[in-house]
Image (cartoon, rainbow, N blue to C red; front, top):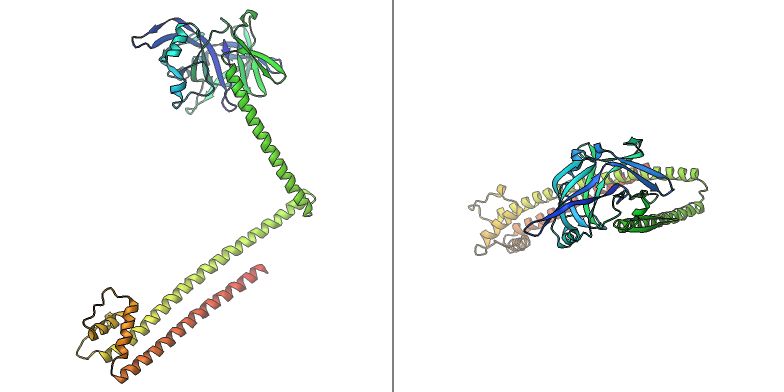
Length: 428
């Protein structure tokens, strides 16, 4: 029996059936080793959904390709065909053993050794309820007509293209299945919902252990061991088709809404819409250019503002240092040497305060606290010229700050005027 079945539309799969040979060997640990003919070469007929018959060739060059046979060793063994692929995650639930590494081509068959460890699978083999094996593999099918050993064919299974650049059959898993129609060669080919083929029964006596599938307007008989897989696949594809139809309906409604909106806006045909879209695109590009230029203007204005701020700070410090030095020279006796050049304005004030109030520790005091102490030190000094100098320094300092601030404001005002003129020029 040969059963052909694609698990998905992007990767065509096949399921071949063979038989367990000889009496299985049981180890001291209770594990079972059994020899099986997993698949074979030959020509197999299929009944398509339109009533025509298609014959596929499984050529020995493809079936016995060493690289193809190498993929068979180690594949998982299952009890019946599960409805999902066997993976490392679900192997503890679905796996019953593995195919041994010894894979041998015995024309026209492929002989393997099964290593079965699960008790339910061992019981199925020993009780002879599961005497056949059903092998799942991936292969492409192409149109290729000819005659092989007296049997004509119209298609050929050629394997799939691998990463090494070569094309060969890729085996995936092997299932233990109930005994089917002894000596039969029949099966189902399902590459897509529109391409359903059932292999023709060669002997009407082989009709036992069959299940009927209802596919649209036709009914077909398939082996009962693979009927659940086909039904699950059809259900999955029906759900996918329903989702696509729902998406198409949604997109159609969105298109109709957009079309109605365009017609209300005065667009009667595709040319009107294309012209409007072209003008809109040009306006978007123009706006994009204006935004880029405005961003650059803002960047430059910020840079100039930062420079003006730095200059203003330097000017303020220069004035403050000069004022502090002038006042300090009147408070501190001449015999006390202070290096004003190495100090900033705050440092000069700290030196004067430390001189006048030696018991006060300045460590940890804020700049504002130092400024407050400096004011008291100046105001309490008995030297009249000192007070006048302090007042004059304060007035000069205030005037300098106002002048610097006015200069910065003028620069920012000029930048804003230039930016406004540039925007008006682009808009015009």
